[in-house]
Image 1: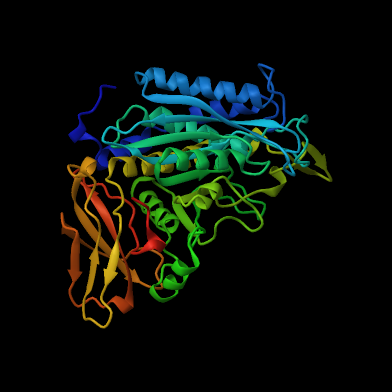
Image 2: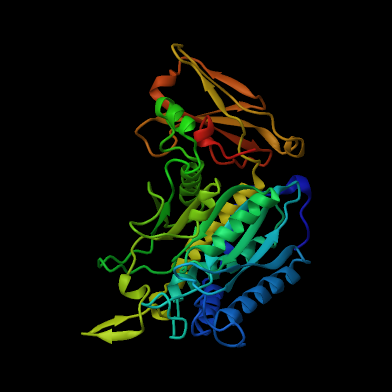
Length: 440
C-alpha cells in the first residue's frame, strides 16, 4: 500500500476498513502453528527447531519480519531478554525472551500504544516444561491476535507509534511484561495504552453459557503508583473510578459499540480476575495505562490442565476450544482501538479543574506539544453523573486550553477532557489531576 500523506492519516471510514480486514482464517493458521510446538513453557527446550519456547519465539520473530518486508520495512523487530533466576517458578538461570515489533509514528514517534499477547503455555504443574502444553486459547489466541493486528495495521501509517509485543514468562511470574515495562521507562517511552490480550478465543464457559457477542475489559480503579498525598487529595476530589486505565477501558468500550458489529464489552472494575494475574499488571505497576481484554465466559477445564480424560470429562487447552471468528472479532477491537488512538492526538496533559462554591466549572490543560500542534483540531469536554459508568454529556470547545461550563456545578458530576484531531478522531478522556493523568 502506498504511503499516506501526513495530513491524510486516518478517519472514521478507515477504522471500519481495518475492522473488516481482520481474518479468522489467518488467526486459525497462527494458533495451529503455535500449538504445533508441543509446549511453549518458559523453561522448555530452546535449541530444537520444532519444539519448545525457542522454536516458537524464532517463528514469531520471523513472522514479524515477514510482515515488515511487506510494508517496506515499517517494523523494527527484535528480541528483548533478561536472565531471571532465584524466583519461585524460575529457580535456576533462564533467559526470558520476548519478541517486540515497533511501528514508528510519523509525527509523534515517542508516543506509544501497545498490543500484547503471551508466548508461553503450561499444564497442571507450573514447573512441568516437558509435557505437551498446547496452550491453544491460553494464549495462542491472544498472540495470534497480535500477529494479525500487525498484518493489518502495518499497511497504514500513524501519528503515534504502535507496538506489537509477544511477551514471554507470563505463567512463571509476568516476567516478559516486567522486562518490557522497565525498558520502556528507561527509554522514555510515553506509553498511553497497553491492551493485553489473554484468552480471546473461548465462547463456551464452564458455567454452561455459550456467547460469542461479549468480551471483558479489566482495569484498575486507582493508580498503584499514587503517593499517600495523592490518595488523600483523591479522597476529596474523586477519581476512584477514573484512572487512566479505567478511561482507556471506557474508550475501548465506545470503540466496540461504534465499529465492531455484535460485540458488547463488559467493563469490569477490577485489576484482574480473583486470585489471578496477567501481563497488563507490570505496566500498571510502572504507572502506564493498561487493561486486559479477554473472553467473557472461561472454561477452567481447558486452562492450566494436563491433557487427559477423567470420569467423562476432557481436560486440556486444545484447538477444539478456540472459536476463530470470535478471536477475530476481539482482534478487530484491538486493531481499531490502536489505530484510533495512534491517529488521534495525545491525550491532554496537566488537566486541572476549578469550581468550588461556584455556579460554573472550569477545566484547563496544557497546550499540545510542538510536534502535535498541527494535529489538533480542538478539545472536547465530557461529564457524567458520578454513578454512571460511561461519559454522558460532552461539548466541543475548540482549540483552547481552558473552558468554563456555565451553570454546570462541579459537585454534581465527574469531568474529563479529550483531544480531537483534524481527522475527527479523539483521544481517551482524561480525568483532572494526578488520579486521571495519562502523562506528558
